[in-house]
Image 1: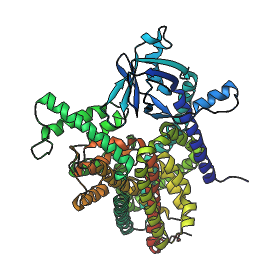
Image 2: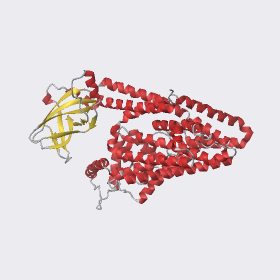
Image 3: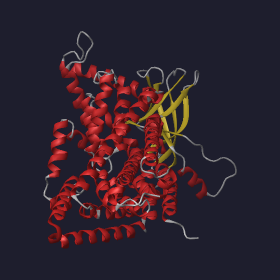
Image 4: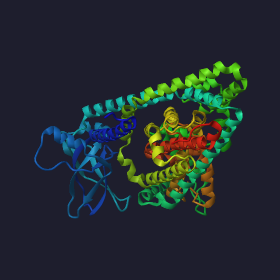
Length: 612
């Protein structure tokens, strides 16, 4: 039996998850050395706490085992090594000191970069003279520290460099086949597709009045569904309150300790009080904290994303309207077509003007009209060619995402992820109801018609890259008139961001729930704060580019509107790629439902058959 494309895409997603998890665990284990540490303490007290290794006075993080080596009969050495690879490491190692005993032995994992610093002493010729010590920090009082009088380290298994190289090459190949080739090919045809499809759609209408009717209905639909998406997100986050859960509050407690240290450091360095007599932070102290946090965030592994967000920090709503909407509309069309990513707003505006001009010119523009109609057909043919490699490409994209992130990211942000996904699912139900009640297309028919576009949007995390497939699915499988699809879908891929708007509202309130009331976050959740978040989330979603991670940039506008420092946003960086899959697929679903609804409302004028 010949498998259909959507079944192959789904299988590719499943295979990608399995391959990604395998790569993640194998790479994580191979990047750590397993060591046995024996330490002696002088008159220890009974208790449980965190331990870290000191080498020449520098602290080295130890990681705790979360799985044991297989017990039972000894197997082949290769099998035992494979099981060791699959042992995962949890950040931070715990040690229990027993009363009456001054020695302790345990196993831990050391990252490969830290292991390089120790290799000159492993194994040491004189074990007792090696510059090692074990730092024990009480789990009750973080300030109570105990340093061992002697420490001996035995290497059980070093980092496996051959496996590390194999994983690195594998990730490179996955990135080449998925994001680089497949997504690059889809993005290659975006600009000509938007131009050709809109010109073809406008010139297919019987008169300019029909364009106005389709246009205002499309805009009203997009604005209403975006506002409803934000409302659903706000209700979800205010009801579930993920920022008040145990894991999130642990993050707050750690931040409180950091701020206490900041106060002492600021007062010692400046000679001025960090707080006023009313226990409110001074402006100079807040500026100093922002400088410290900005430097720390700008130097981490997410430095590029933080730098992008910092560039948007001082922008007002007026600046965004002028810079992200007005100026792109009036950009040279050739510059808009050649930009990377393409300037979608500029292409749409020029295509509308060109289509209207061709319609008014009549027969004199027949050659131009024919050219764009045929160009649209050719680009859709290229889209079908690209879809033939979609299953393999999507498997590579999924494998790369899972391998780089892994499931550990949900330990702290699980409730937050659940809130965002729950809100998105509620909005999907709303869209399905709208599609059935107004568009006349039931849930099963909608899924069968849009599933290929939805799965590609889910994996590529780009509404723009999915646009060719979305147009093909709605016109060929859902009987949406090309006159509607060629206009509403490119516009929707640019400005209709239901999932992104919902996500931004949830994210900002989640951060306020965690950090609200601290020295540098003086805001709390009130009706006015909620309303400001609602308005700015709706407006910011319109300015979000249809590319991965754009939501993080526009979130700066929402955070700035309620005076939430942007250096808190990197907390959710770890799960952004995962959540981006859900919100982008929701964006595409909203675009498709919009085309179905507008097609149903305009079918008596267009003479188009209703979707079946």
